Length: 112
Image (cartoon, rainbow, N blue to C red; front, side):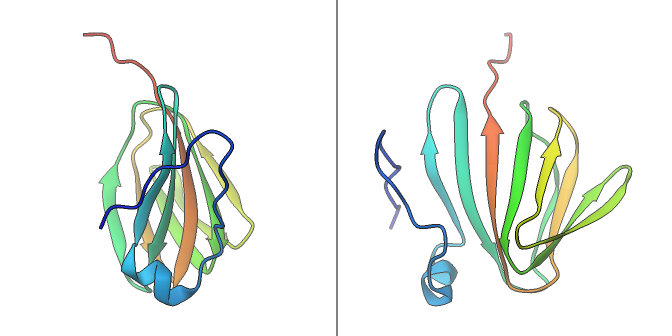
């Protein structure tokens, strides 16, 4: 079942119980014309293959430990860490422990 997006003025608790996180490993909290925010949860050892997005992004580790693979080398994030990636930068993600993180993407219009 898809979880609804937040509407302007609504709040969401990012620190949900683990059992609830496991049922919805990725949830777009909101998306509008310019911004998308996604809460993700990965079990230890799970990964996301190398990918990139058109706009700049931030990754904020909420709990656990996650490794972000970049061309310049890996970055290991712990709870409370924030990582900025410029637009188009390839990256892969691996959970070193049970982890939750928040991804914020600036949505750029791609010229057609």
